[in-house]
Image (tube, rainbow, N blue to C red; front, side, top):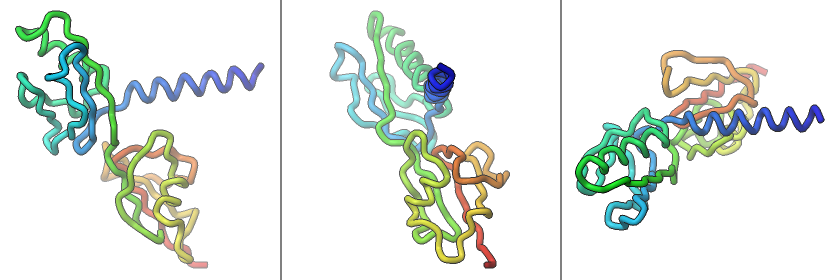
Length: 170
């Protein structure tokens, strides 16, 4: 029973976290305006200025919005003289990348996926070099790039984050 409640709690946490995810530049989105195929977009990339180009509406800033907020914003604009009761659905097809650098075999940018941990990101980067240290890993969050946090492999990462693996002396 306790295990079930524990699992239920964390399932709720994951759901809440995904609902709070903020859209950012470089992501690939899908926008569906129900019963309006000419206004729907199978794939649209968020520009570096945080905007997407929507037919009839032009450039709409979606950066920093949740999916739900972006859907409401688009529906509001479409309801303002274009459609009666527009229904908009949006989804992220491809997230921004995250970066793994330092003492890993293949430093670089890697595709983000939900639930990605520091350890999994290091595996994507080919694993540690012989000099790589599991105890000297830092993480700079996209929303606070100036602050480096010492982390272990279990920490969840986000798109735009930078993971740096330090060097071991032994």
